[in-house]
Length: 245
Image (cartoon, rainbow, N blue to C red; front, side, top):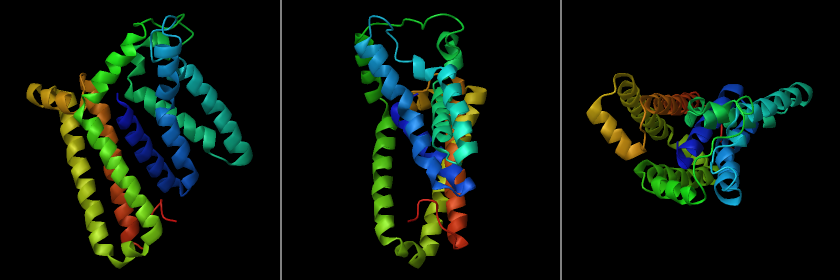
């Protein structure tokens, strides 16, 4: 899938895990892990070594690398109780799932089936970039995340306003949860029944082609709805919201 959807997924997953475990140290590594494969593999495979790989999904898109991070992360977590590398592994896995890596077994199960699959040379990176720029949802997610970051900074400075206007804040969080729940339902149903008209709309908006992409995207939206509802519940119970100072 696309960069800002990966980033959005990492943020939602990181905040949700941190909220469940009451540990904000999980957030940043999960977010980094959710976009790290593209930040490493695409320059390596499509630019610097395009003639060798010709593929933006190589090492960091493989289960082998994920397992290395996972095992080392578990050791660090058990020995020093620090979730950093384990959280990074979780972010990596989210990226691989969103990219449907099981459909490219030579990469996902590397090195079991030999070297990586060659796709195209260096020009292919620009073709992918042009495709990504044309996806409407990427622009909306980018603007939304910039807006959310600004609100986050404002909350850090003026967090007392949340308590003062608790009812309004809770209503906004609840409304957001309902919107994402409805969006999740639409995408889930579209993926399951392959409704032609709805599929065409989702393709133009999200750039999704396969039904499984709709199901996975619906899962991401469902997680976002759960996160917003938990934030609403914590606010109404006068508990600390996970990104509070």
